[in-house]
Image (cartoon, helix red, strand yellow):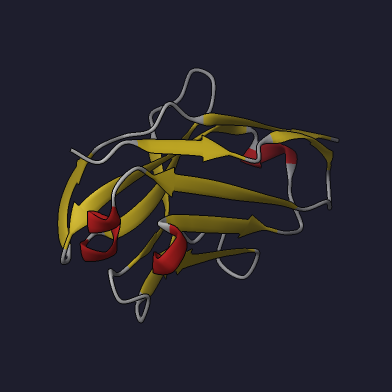
Length: 119
């Protein structure tokens, strides 16, 4: 079972940037599609972005399209989420997880990293 550890969260002013990382414990990381979700206080967890196991296909929630970029480095067993032009409504705990070849079954959730955007 793949273990995932997120890092890179913090406090940033609106308009600022952060880069989140999600490091996997195993080399089998490279066979998985990778996903970022987020959960704001009092709200359901929502999809943010995903990247295919090859890195060739990405998807984004409409709310982050054009501002966030997902990428991966299979040699480092790590997936990234570059977040630019941050807004207060981006404040949430961000989680990464795996899925497999397009199936929307999400597993191996990390513990999350807090992102707080001040206005």
